[in-house]
Image 1: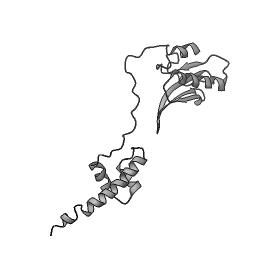
Image 2: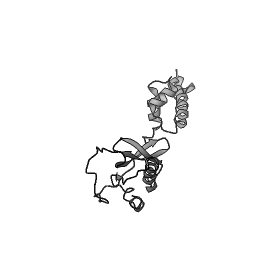
Image 3: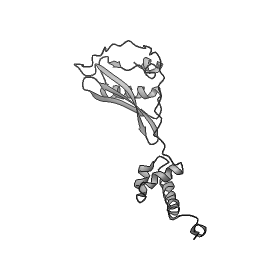
Image 4: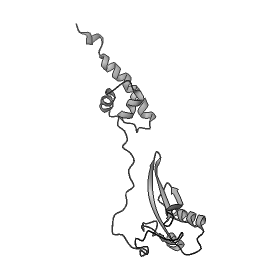
Length: 173
């Protein structure tokens, strides 16, 4: 008559406890970044109850990485724009453009600086580092100079970010 006295947990509650152990194991093995869809693929037998159990026990995936924030403000002109949006160059090693991008990895952000020859549209120098240091852009430009060995003066165009406005960069150019 009072079955709950002899068996305080229902069959569903017992199954939920078993699944919770599997969920926590998969969640911790993923480095706490898996959400219910990926944990479902790991556990497979639980179906839609994975999301409910995770919600009840406050198990949540880490939502990606924070994107690097750039300081907003009025841009200063370090060097005048000599290229004037003339991106079609008739001879090699006359004008190079350079920029920095960032790439998300499992271990954090990597910063990539690349130098491209406008004539051939090929990347002729690059550098990748885990920090946004001024050496990043200098290493990329040094690689381009080392690989191409230009005989004439080369116009190097950049977006004039803080790395391109550094004293080291200006002295090198």
